[in-house]
Amino acid sequence: MSQSVVGEGQNFLAGDYLAAIRDFALSKGVNAKTLLEGSQLSIDVLLNPPQRVGEISMHRVGSNLVNELDDPLTASIEYGRGITLNVHGALGVAVQGAQNLVDAAQLLQQYISTRSNIKEITKVVYDDYISLRMSARTLSAKKVADPVRFFFDFATLINFDTLGRRLLAGYDIDGMSVINIDMPEPENFPYELLKDTIEVRFNQPFFEICVPKEWMFKKLSIDNTELAMAAADKCESELAELDSKDLIKEIRRRIREAQEAKPTLDDMASQLYMSTSTLQRRIKEQHTTYQKIKAEERMVEAKDLLANSDISMEAISERLGFNNASNFTKSFKAWMGVTPKAFRKEHSGI
Image 1 (cartoon, rainbow, N blue to C red):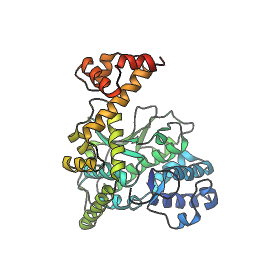
Image 2: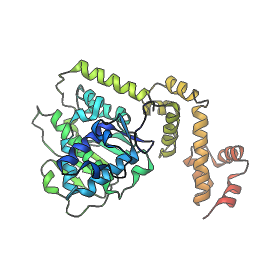
Image 3: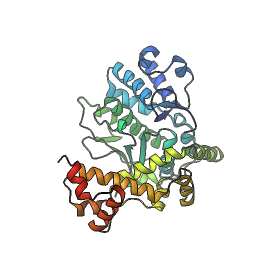
Image 4: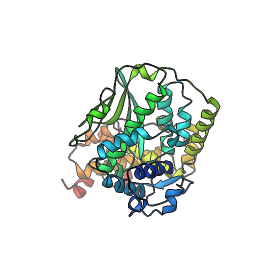
């Protein structure tokens, strides 16, 4: 990103969230020295938070906060309920101009990376609910047993529910949100604090909040349309700051993590909220092509499967999107200089 990241870690969270943690910590009697211990951040950063703070430093600050709290589970709910839309910067202002919660969810999904590049939001439609599913972009954010991750991720979903209800304040809404959590149920979880508003379910496959579908299409009152549009333009500008090298990393990650067919160029452009021609141009700036990137990632996955699994050649070729095992063998040999069978024999630890 063109804006520098203060503190440790190449990945970042917006400095506004450091300010929110600071204020919450002070309200709980946690002093600044304790909050910053081991974070590589100075006291000046607490007074004047930068635009972006490194993920490692933010995690340390979060850990210091959680360790000082008498009841982190209750505090997580309190923290999530206390964050206003304005804490989310230009994205929060843009959301206030949405036609309905579906539009608000689209803005969140589109511009979340301007606030943090360690998480992403995916909208999933169920029969009676629409889900906002949160997943990790980085390995460090995938520590499922991390109490700091639970505190802030759970607070984020509580915040989504709180802000959604505030945007719907003019309606008499029925029903409850559902928060699914991909972690075991902790002891003494404060269900009573969420009674009649949110149902919490643990040991679920995803970390998400599910909102009744009927809520999502209720028209929101728009007070500052021009300001909201200007905020959306600012989000778009911040998104455009994504360095082409970082863009290549993101493309590789999405190709690598695709569960089914690998995305086409048009698919990838759609996922990244840009035109196909713009994506091609930005990839070309790095002296490569989408097809080359895709081929490289397929070979990386092929080598991993050959060395670390006993999956058949037919299954590997199908998983990687080849028409048959013969085409896979030809491509692999052209890339590596040996056949898949020979590579497996030499490198397999199975």
